[in-house]
Image 1 (cartoon, rainbow, N blue to C red):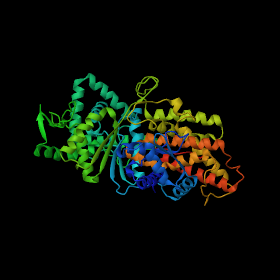
Image 2 (image 1 turned 180 degrees about the vertical axis):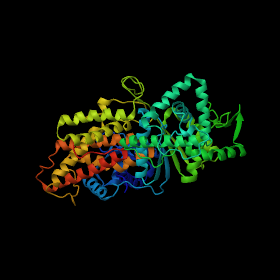
Image 3 (image 1 turned 60 degrees about the vertical axis):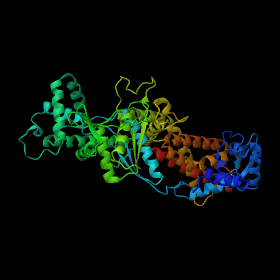
Image 4 (image 1 turned 180 degrees about the horizontal axis):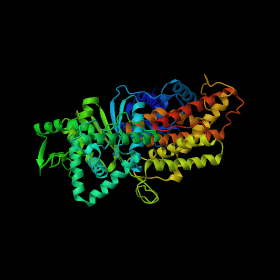
Length: 587
């Protein structure tokens, strides 16, 4: 269904046309003076130059053509030429009842849905997830859900770092510790063990030990590089170790991402792109896109309009080894072959922007992707501590993600137990839900591209612009509806005309839902969805404090209130689902 703003704009266009003016001037916006009106149209100001008339004269002509319009309660022309609008309460209640009946609460799916791949996550296997992985997971998950809500076919890919030098380091360190394992015996022809020769805990200790040792010992480093080369060229024993690393790591990653309520459709990595590299490299050479520069194979991507230098996209190093550029391009080859996406969105650290400029330009220039395929870089800022520096543990190290989640959950558990309204077991479950909302809302309420301060005290507060405040509002609405349903049914009740300014404010805020979703979708901006639900929660809480709801004696009025609350709850629940968290029944 059309948004409320679209319906109002249609009426304004009709009035401009009737008054003899071009309808392009009939743009309606939310009022920036809510004390005076709810919506406004400033088109008369813009039309004045075209028609060589005073803006107030044009505004008066348009207002005259609106007459007794059922859409508006009040229409007035104000000097020097503004048109102020208030919506008719019956028009709003009718609109909200239609929203209630609609399966998607008035949100229209796209007429031409797209196939979109969202590349987010990007952890290296064999390493624990740390707070640096938080933003890609949270932002990517929300974007995936928003894109799907509008009817697109969306594929979320974790794109693991699973094929580089770290694999060679692990293999070398494992051989140093357990040389007797069959993987290192060149004459071994039997079946390798099904069980990995290490646990996730051991694996997470092996890598940093090997990495540190390699920095101090050149011969060890050379051996690790050679092990990487052998792995990538099909060494049977090393491939078996790699398979163990993947199984152990992925099982642990799935557990950690589940705790974040993040799900990937594909668990692919750099290794999956390897088979596409040789043919891609040959194509780049044959068609004359790639050339050698100091022994390295490169593709020039500099453009005439560039104000600063954009280095060539490096396809192969002088020793013939592939790089990130290579695997990212080969991954696009694979995605084109398997999914033919209309769009690929990369949710990655904004400091990687130059790399993606090079890859995108190379992919377009060489025909790896079709000219019409959209490649979008969505770079996010850093999550910082209160000192303004990247978030660390109290000891100064990089914090593991599971430890951060545990700390937040413990903080929420304390606060919930202080209220003593739920059992200990329920408090633990509720703390996990509220803790996740605190983390996700705390992150998503900031514009993705900006750095932000991760403030545990503020994010876990039940007051202010926080996840717990939003959940507390939803739980409060649930409580009211549940009390009513103990003796009555919510079936068939309708939203009535507003009987107070607080009720009308809540109605207008609820009615913005589909308009907000469209804006959030168009701009790929989850922070705007957070801003909306904060406004909606505030509008509800003002209405709640100013209105006797369950004790209202007028039964028709009471049912109208409850129908409005039911819709408000559904809107809020849909929004937090798109942000990637949910509300408990009680808090």
